[in-house]
Image: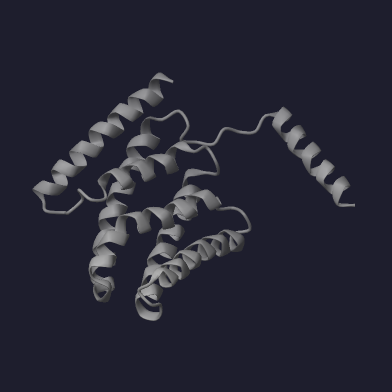
Length: 186
């Protein structure tokens, strides 16, 4: 517990420092720093799958969010229907990518990636939809940097960076639930 609290305090300090360093080098991180740092911390903290799988799922979701904005700019009207279609596409891409991985990648991490990209980019996109190629890359780069820092700081010091192995009781309970479900399905 003490290690997790220390990781949280270090994450808070890193968030502030990231904004200050970003301002010094004109990296324009201010708008995405908190979202990116906390998204990276979430990916590091949730003990589901291995860290590379969580990061991979997050990255694929991030790309799915980017693709949905590119499709939205090129093919969809700038209406609520277009926004809904792009959101539908982003979630569908996340689900499809997780299905292609045969469940090895966690869906929550992919959805977090798509959602954090959308959260960071929507305001910028709405201001200038025709500039989607330029603005999406700059926003994505800034967000990616913050996610990486948040993940590294949290994973380095947190107690929950690695998934805990299932206990024998959890395996038995899971098997019992599957057996019960199979019986009901008959």
